[in-house]
Image 1 (cartoon, rainbow, N blue to C red):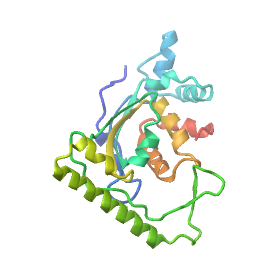
Image 2 (cartoon, rainbow, N blue to C red; image 1 turned 180 degrees about the horizontal axis):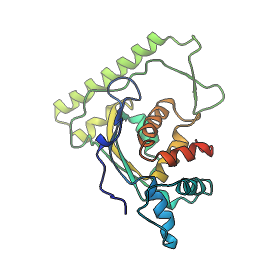
Image 3 (cartoon, rainbow, N blue to C red; image 1 turned 30 degrees about the vertical axis):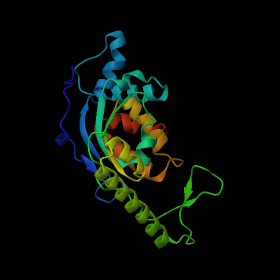
Image 4 (tube, rainbow, N blue to C red; image 1 turned 60 degrees about the vertical axis):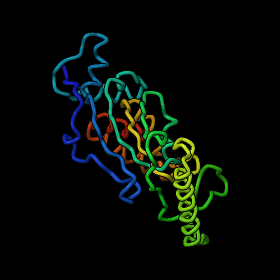
Length: 239
Protein backbone atom coordinates (compact mmCIF):
# COMPACT_ATOMS: atom_id res chain seq x y z
CA UNK A 1 0.00 0.00 0.00
CA UNK A 2 1.01 3.66 -0.28
CA UNK A 3 3.58 5.01 2.13
CA UNK A 4 1.63 7.48 4.26
CA UNK A 5 4.55 9.17 5.99
CA UNK A 6 4.27 12.98 5.73
CA UNK A 7 6.12 14.13 2.63
CA UNK A 8 8.74 16.84 2.78
CA UNK A 9 7.96 20.14 1.12
CA UNK A 10 11.17 19.59 -0.83
CA UNK A 11 9.20 17.06 -2.86
CA UNK A 12 7.17 19.84 -4.47
CA UNK A 13 8.21 22.40 -7.06
CA UNK A 14 6.86 25.33 -5.03
CA UNK A 15 6.32 25.46 -1.29
CA UNK A 16 5.92 29.17 -0.47
CA UNK A 17 3.76 31.87 -2.05
CA UNK A 18 3.09 35.52 -1.17
CA UNK A 19 -0.57 36.22 -2.00
CA UNK A 20 -0.47 39.91 -1.06
CA UNK A 21 2.92 40.58 -2.72
CA UNK A 22 4.25 42.42 0.33
CA UNK A 23 6.86 39.90 1.48
CA UNK A 24 4.95 39.23 4.72
CA UNK A 25 1.63 37.59 3.98
CA UNK A 26 2.36 34.05 2.85
CA UNK A 27 1.16 30.49 2.40
CA UNK A 28 3.72 27.73 2.93
CA UNK A 29 3.23 24.03 2.26
CA UNK A 30 4.41 22.28 5.42
CA UNK A 31 3.58 18.63 4.78
CA UNK A 32 1.17 16.33 3.00
CA UNK A 33 0.01 12.73 3.21
CA UNK A 34 -1.56 10.68 0.43
CA UNK A 35 -2.04 11.07 -3.30
CA UNK A 36 -4.60 10.39 -6.04
CA UNK A 37 -4.00 6.65 -5.69
CA UNK A 38 -4.92 6.80 -2.00
CA UNK A 39 -8.27 8.30 -2.96
CA UNK A 40 -8.88 5.45 -5.41
CA UNK A 41 -7.90 2.83 -2.84
CA UNK A 42 -10.18 4.36 -0.21
CA UNK A 43 -13.07 4.05 -2.66
CA UNK A 44 -12.25 0.52 -3.80
CA UNK A 45 -11.55 -0.98 -0.39
CA UNK A 46 -15.29 -1.34 0.16
CA UNK A 47 -15.24 -4.32 -2.22
CA UNK A 48 -11.63 -5.37 -1.66
CA UNK A 49 -10.35 -3.75 -4.81
CA UNK A 50 -7.53 -1.62 -3.41
CA UNK A 51 -4.05 -2.37 -4.73
CA UNK A 52 -0.43 -1.29 -5.03
CA UNK A 53 -0.72 -0.87 -8.79
CA UNK A 54 0.21 2.52 -10.29
CA UNK A 55 -2.60 4.94 -11.03
CA UNK A 56 -4.29 3.93 -14.28
CA UNK A 57 -6.85 5.45 -16.65
CA UNK A 58 -9.68 3.56 -14.96
CA UNK A 59 -8.58 5.08 -11.65
CA UNK A 60 -8.78 8.57 -13.14
CA UNK A 61 -12.30 7.83 -14.35
CA UNK A 62 -13.23 6.65 -10.87
CA UNK A 63 -12.00 9.90 -9.31
CA UNK A 64 -14.08 11.87 -11.80
CA UNK A 65 -17.10 9.68 -11.05
CA UNK A 66 -16.70 10.18 -7.30
CA UNK A 67 -16.56 13.96 -7.68
CA UNK A 68 -19.49 14.15 -10.10
CA UNK A 69 -21.67 12.05 -7.83
CA UNK A 70 -20.47 13.70 -4.61
CA UNK A 71 -19.04 10.58 -2.98
CA UNK A 72 -16.91 12.55 -0.55
CA UNK A 73 -15.41 10.15 2.00
CA UNK A 74 -12.64 8.71 -0.26
CA UNK A 75 -11.19 12.24 -0.44
CA UNK A 76 -10.78 12.41 3.35
CA UNK A 77 -7.92 9.88 3.76
CA UNK A 78 -5.11 12.37 3.27
CA UNK A 79 -3.92 15.68 4.66
CA UNK A 80 -2.31 18.90 3.52
CA UNK A 81 -0.82 21.30 6.08
CA UNK A 82 -0.20 24.96 5.31
CA UNK A 83 1.40 27.66 7.42
CA UNK A 84 -0.61 30.79 6.71
CA UNK A 85 0.47 34.32 7.61
CA UNK A 86 -2.40 36.66 6.86
CA UNK A 87 -4.28 39.69 8.19
CA UNK A 88 -6.76 38.88 10.95
CA UNK A 89 -9.68 39.95 8.75
CA UNK A 90 -8.62 37.33 6.17
CA UNK A 91 -8.11 34.67 8.82
CA UNK A 92 -11.62 35.24 10.15
CA UNK A 93 -13.01 34.44 6.71
CA UNK A 94 -10.93 31.27 6.53
CA UNK A 95 -11.59 29.97 10.04
CA UNK A 96 -15.30 29.65 9.34
CA UNK A 97 -14.45 26.42 7.48
CA UNK A 98 -13.92 23.92 10.30
CA UNK A 99 -15.39 20.66 8.98
CA UNK A 100 -12.40 18.49 8.09
CA UNK A 101 -10.03 21.35 8.96
CA UNK A 102 -7.66 21.69 11.93
CA UNK A 103 -6.18 25.03 13.02
CA UNK A 104 -3.63 26.29 15.53
CA UNK A 105 -2.83 30.02 15.73
CA UNK A 106 -0.16 32.16 17.37
CA UNK A 107 -1.48 33.56 20.65
CA UNK A 108 -1.15 37.14 21.80
CA UNK A 109 -1.59 35.84 25.33
CA UNK A 110 1.75 34.05 25.24
CA UNK A 111 3.91 36.27 23.03
CA UNK A 112 4.24 39.98 22.42
CA UNK A 113 2.61 40.79 19.12
CA UNK A 114 4.93 41.83 16.29
CA UNK A 115 4.41 45.29 14.83
CA UNK A 116 3.39 44.25 11.35
CA UNK A 117 0.12 44.81 9.61
CA UNK A 118 -1.27 44.78 6.11
CA UNK A 119 -1.81 47.92 4.07
CA UNK A 120 -3.72 47.63 0.77
CA UNK A 121 -1.90 48.74 -2.37
CA UNK A 122 -5.18 50.20 -3.56
CA UNK A 123 -8.42 50.86 -1.75
CA UNK A 124 -11.72 49.68 -3.22
CA UNK A 125 -15.20 51.15 -3.01
CA UNK A 126 -18.27 49.59 -1.45
CA UNK A 127 -20.45 47.85 -4.03
CA UNK A 128 -23.67 49.86 -4.44
CA UNK A 129 -26.02 46.87 -4.44
CA UNK A 130 -24.15 44.21 -2.44
CA UNK A 131 -23.45 44.73 1.25
CA UNK A 132 -20.61 42.21 1.35
CA UNK A 133 -18.86 43.10 -1.90
CA UNK A 134 -16.45 45.74 -3.17
CA UNK A 135 -15.73 47.26 -6.55
CA UNK A 136 -12.60 48.78 -8.04
CA UNK A 137 -11.94 52.46 -7.52
CA UNK A 138 -13.41 54.44 -10.42
CA UNK A 139 -11.06 57.32 -9.77
CA UNK A 140 -13.24 59.03 -7.18
CA UNK A 141 -11.43 57.66 -4.12
CA UNK A 142 -8.62 59.76 -2.66
CA UNK A 143 -6.10 56.94 -2.43
CA UNK A 144 -3.48 59.09 -0.72
CA UNK A 145 -5.88 60.20 2.00
CA UNK A 146 -7.02 56.63 2.56
CA UNK A 147 -3.41 55.44 2.90
CA UNK A 148 -2.67 58.21 5.41
CA UNK A 149 -5.73 57.42 7.53
CA UNK A 150 -4.89 53.69 7.53
CA UNK A 151 -1.28 54.35 8.54
CA UNK A 152 -2.33 56.73 11.32
CA UNK A 153 -4.79 54.21 12.73
CA UNK A 154 -2.16 51.47 12.69
CA UNK A 155 0.49 53.63 14.34
CA UNK A 156 -1.95 54.76 17.02
CA UNK A 157 -3.04 51.21 17.78
CA UNK A 158 0.48 49.84 18.12
CA UNK A 159 1.58 52.80 20.22
CA UNK A 160 -1.36 52.20 22.57
CA UNK A 161 -0.49 48.49 22.75
CA UNK A 162 3.11 49.11 23.76
CA UNK A 163 2.09 51.82 26.25
CA UNK A 164 -0.31 49.39 27.92
CA UNK A 165 2.42 46.75 28.14
CA UNK A 166 4.78 49.34 29.64
CA UNK A 167 2.20 50.06 32.31
CA UNK A 168 2.21 46.39 33.22
CA UNK A 169 -1.10 45.50 31.56
CA UNK A 170 -1.28 41.81 30.65
CA UNK A 171 -0.72 40.84 27.01
CA UNK A 172 -4.11 39.18 26.77
CA UNK A 173 -5.83 42.51 27.45
CA UNK A 174 -3.41 44.89 25.73
CA UNK A 175 -3.89 43.09 22.41
CA UNK A 176 -7.50 44.26 22.41
CA UNK A 177 -6.51 47.63 20.91
CA UNK A 178 -4.79 46.11 17.86
CA UNK A 179 -6.38 46.36 14.39
CA UNK A 180 -7.89 43.66 12.19
CA UNK A 181 -5.12 44.40 9.68
CA UNK A 182 -2.61 42.86 12.11
CA UNK A 183 -0.85 39.80 10.69
CA UNK A 184 -1.52 36.53 12.44
CA UNK A 185 -0.08 33.10 11.66
CA UNK A 186 -1.61 29.67 11.82
CA UNK A 187 -1.22 26.08 10.79
CA UNK A 188 -4.20 24.90 8.74
CA UNK A 189 -4.58 21.20 7.95
CA UNK A 190 -7.15 20.09 5.38
CA UNK A 191 -8.12 16.81 3.83
CA UNK A 192 -8.77 17.06 0.09
CA UNK A 193 -12.53 17.04 0.51
CA UNK A 194 -12.45 19.96 2.94
CA UNK A 195 -9.93 21.85 0.81
CA UNK A 196 -12.04 21.57 -2.34
CA UNK A 197 -15.05 22.81 -0.39
CA UNK A 198 -13.00 25.71 0.97
CA UNK A 199 -11.73 26.65 -2.49
CA UNK A 200 -15.21 26.52 -4.02
CA UNK A 201 -16.36 29.18 -1.55
CA UNK A 202 -13.26 31.31 -1.01
CA UNK A 203 -11.83 31.31 -4.54
CA UNK A 204 -15.09 32.62 -5.90
CA UNK A 205 -16.24 35.89 -7.47
CA UNK A 206 -18.28 36.67 -4.36
CA UNK A 207 -15.43 36.15 -1.91
CA UNK A 208 -13.43 38.97 -0.34
CA UNK A 209 -10.56 39.83 -2.69
CA UNK A 210 -7.71 39.33 -0.21
CA UNK A 211 -9.16 36.06 1.04
CA UNK A 212 -9.51 34.87 -2.53
CA UNK A 213 -5.81 35.48 -3.13
CA UNK A 214 -5.00 33.19 -0.20
CA UNK A 215 -7.37 30.51 -1.45
CA UNK A 216 -5.75 30.65 -4.88
CA UNK A 217 -2.31 30.24 -3.31
CA UNK A 218 -3.44 27.21 -1.33
CA UNK A 219 -4.95 25.66 -4.43
CA UNK A 220 -1.78 26.30 -6.40
CA UNK A 221 0.33 24.52 -3.79
CA UNK A 222 -2.07 21.58 -3.44
CA UNK A 223 -2.77 20.95 -7.12
CA UNK A 224 0.56 19.21 -7.92
CA UNK A 225 0.04 16.84 -4.99
CA UNK A 226 -3.32 15.56 -6.27
CA UNK A 227 -3.21 16.46 -9.98
CA UNK A 228 -5.86 14.01 -11.22
CA UNK A 229 -8.33 15.08 -8.55
CA UNK A 230 -7.87 18.79 -9.22
CA UNK A 231 -8.08 18.30 -12.99
CA UNK A 232 -11.31 16.32 -12.66
CA UNK A 233 -12.72 18.89 -10.26
CA UNK A 234 -12.04 21.65 -12.78
CA UNK A 235 -13.41 19.61 -15.67
CA UNK A 236 -16.78 19.03 -14.03
CA UNK A 237 -17.09 22.73 -13.42
CA UNK A 238 -16.81 22.72 -9.66
CA UNK A 239 -14.03 25.26 -10.05
